[in-house]
Length: 261
Image (cartoon, rainbow, N blue to C red; front, side, top):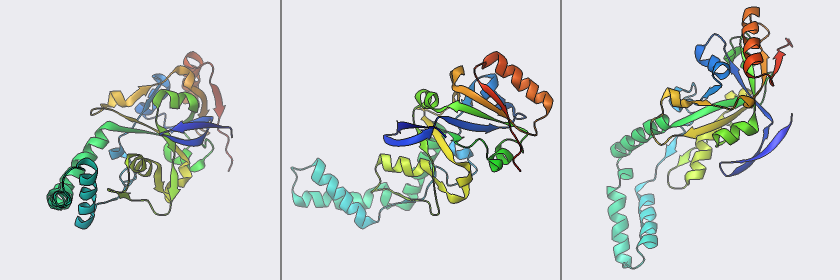
């Protein structure tokens, strides 16, 4: 497998030259990849895995809040007295929404909703010969697997990276994790039971609640470079896809999946 070096979200990693998306040709939305050259960036609220992009968050105790606000006072208000800084820290460690579970829960709920509304994920894979993926995402080998030029994908979309699979998911530590650490933990870690997917993911963030139409992002036609037809796909559907490829993506290679069992 050929790899390319990329810097995504400020982190260096290698990614395959081709990334794949398994699709069910009976699903009208899945067809848009070929008929309209569009890929869909799903909201995390629609994920099968409830922890995907929604890791557990650990919030500070009151004593930790005091230390945090004292540090803020030292940094932002260097000219006030030591007593004034301690009073500032005591006040905010008691009155900050983080110190009150109900208020904190409300803030988290609102933020989660906003995150789901504005964030989108495109899940890809490095493996086009994965029986479990054919069964789960391509209608039991009756669908197809589409290969994309990964460099074009990242150039068009922007952020993304390789998913790491772990036995125990990391947690978000509210005071200790900076924005980059929060982002990497929350977006690129999944439980080991999903490791069969060998996932690479791309993501987008809108400045507002994204509609379904906006989540369907159009790609250059040259981005699609392979189309693999499932071994159990009906002949009529194979002909339909082959005709689309001939007319819209003449540069793309058409491959028929071979049963390896």
